[in-house]
Image (cartoon, rainbow, N blue to C red; front, side, top):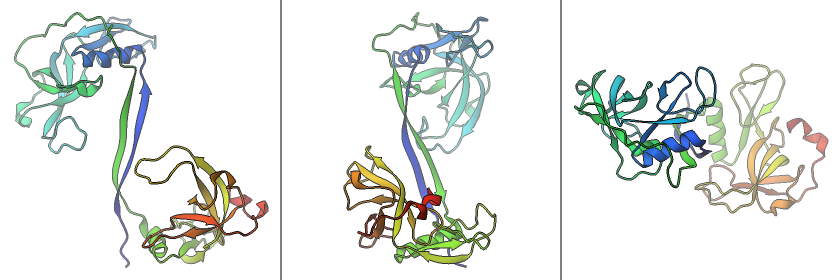
Length: 313
């Protein structure tokens, strides 16, 4: 049986969001070593604060400072911290009800082992030495033997409030293309584009999926398509992607290779971006040692008639 490919894959992008007055005050307070909650219509204090009452759905904005000390309500031991977590040594995830709050805040507790943490233990905030207005301004919690801490008396009004945050969303996983796409990738390395034909509807899938999504039947008959094809639809990219050495603007298109039953993605080169059009006939351009086409360029043929590719839009 041929070896099935697998490789680590990372999907990452920055997520930017604006803050309303409540979240702005909470994060700005952390920057100033102040923990703020919000009082609900029934008098409870929620930490972290929310903008709408979870019971009545009324808008709430009555900010209340709570102490940087509190009590562990529940916990779980993290024996192998991952990238981006608060500590790089084993720690406990804890829910801490800060003194003056009615709800618990999730964060890390820095203790030497699971025997050193228990429900009901007293803890306090360990502030990060450099703070910017983010939940990471609380570096972690640490054990504390004293009584309730004293709030500083802040009312939630600060100079230079934090109005927005940028968080990196990231997903790390191992991707395996499976039998059908492994064969597709291996053929690409030989500069051949090979799909699979459905035994019922006879559509040729490129890249192959191992089964026809319409008929539900396994596909095993391999069919070489292309190398030339037709641009069916396209978009002009004006934002430069991280780690992608391509000048903007450029065109990314759906290309229906000759003999294929659906279009695949490819970058269009060798032509000004504003001259790319539906129906443009293109061919692949390979780089030395490349395992897939670097881009597609015009062949010089007349444009394809719309009727020949309209079903693949």
